Image (cartoon, rainbow, N blue to C red; front, side, top):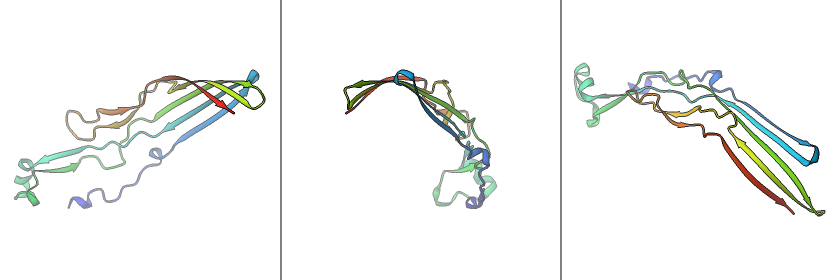
Length: 151
């Protein structure tokens, strides 16, 4: 029965290990610098083959139960094949401007995905011509200007 295929799945350590670091520092003249670095495991890759009734019926000796036309067959055991790790660096440089005794304005320049990685976040797990084709990748490098007023 298909319920017993891959009934014991153990995720390896490399697929669970995450590295995250954050730092912030105030430089002279009220310049603030901060960075966030993340290194995360890639998504698990599957290979699911949709076997048709014409392929299954001769060896099975009958049609599929319930009138089904296909059966999904996992060709790769779960949690055994993974995409590459995702590395991402975000950086912020800000300047604080004091406006009186209680108000403060902070101007920021943010750079997301500074290393411009293109790691795969989601891929096609259906076995065939499009197998492992990326469906979602890491966002490109983005630069943003912002301001915050504290009063």
